[in-house]
Amino acid sequence: MIPRDPSSSLSGIERKDQTPRHGHAHAHADTAIHPGQAPVPTPLLPPLLMDQDGTAFKRWFPWLVPSFVVANVAVFVITMYENNCPQHSNSNRDSCFATFLGRFSFQPLKQNPLLGPSSFTLEKMGALQVDKVVHRHQVWRLLSCIWLHGGVVHVLANMLSLFLIGIRLEQEFGFVRIGLLYVISGFGGSLLSALFIQSGISVGASGALFGLLGAMLSELLTNWTIYANKFAALLTLIVTIVINLAVGILPHVDNFAHIGGFISGFLLGFVFLIRPQYKWVRQRNSRSGYAAPPPVNSKHKPYQYVLWIVSFTLLSAGLIVGMVLLLRGTDLNDHCSWCHYLSCVPTAKWSCKPQEVYCESTQIGNQLNMTCLSNGRSDVFPVSNNSPSQAQQLCSRLCS
Image 1 (tube, rainbow, N blue to C red):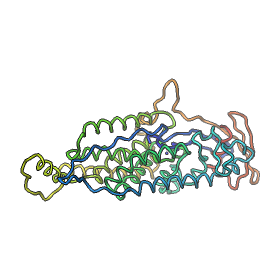
Image 2 (cartoon, rainbow, N blue to C red):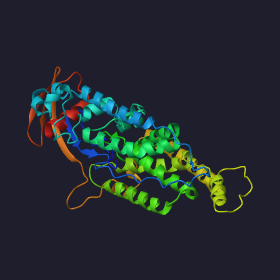
Image 3 (tube, one colour):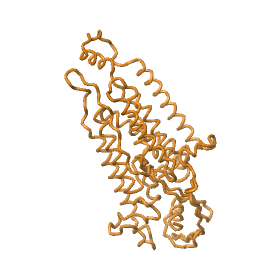
Image 4 (cartoon, helix red, strand yellow):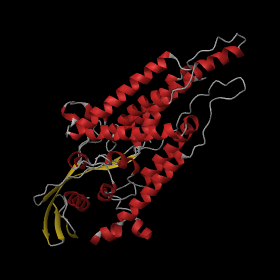
């Protein structure tokens, strides 16, 4: 997502800007990747135990996940069209990257190294901004942000991960369950991110992608008895998840979105991805030469029902409580002094604090005169209305 936007555990970008209204602009310039690493190979689920006729569960034709990929790419193209760097860069037109692309050219690499639009354009297209969710009741941003990406690098890494993970899951469980799992996990990731990172904007599908990983883990656990080679698959899956979450402690990566998406997907896996069990035990015993036990009414084991009820209750309560806290403007960092380490751990080689830049501005008519106090650069920008978000973007651009 931009942390304040794809996880590149599967990936996203986030730029943090803030500007006071009284003539001075103060911006936190920070670009983060959601997740910012190359896609990690996705472990496949272990093979199912087969029926007597050699068939397993019904396999679905995967069309929804490819549709999601196309939709994400289409939204990114529209975002770049709307960004129109040559027109909006004013006197700095030549600073746009890949100008041969015309209005689709990218922002300067110093502003967005992921080859993408400005944070102002992402905000306009529906990026997550906590202030607008809380004070303007734009709750839809919790969902719209998962369809936006910070750049070519971001969208390609996320969509490759979505394709590798999602196709297999949709083949096994169908488009309805996987579609709901993807969207709800993305919402859960955005919600947790908004409760901890409340400045700047956030975009990216990382939370939804981590939700698919979490669902793979819970699906393996709840359907444990019907799989072969389950221990090797479990170990591979856990290692993959740990590596991806560990990358989230690097600067500029919104790990709260990863964690929120993973928890949501893990709980949803117990709800949506449950499989019948007794039927397969009877068939396995029959093939081993034992008489099949008498038929049973239920195809599921008692522990599966328990996990279903507990997971549904925890997820529902978590999302409801989270929304109530968010709409009240609660910052969970005030109640958890160490939680910020889950998203970034400072070391001698990097700092987790966003770079602060300050601008002084005056407006005459439709022209905004702005000076960056950190580097002394000045410029004049034509503006239709001097909104705080636009001033934030201009200040970050001038000081970069």
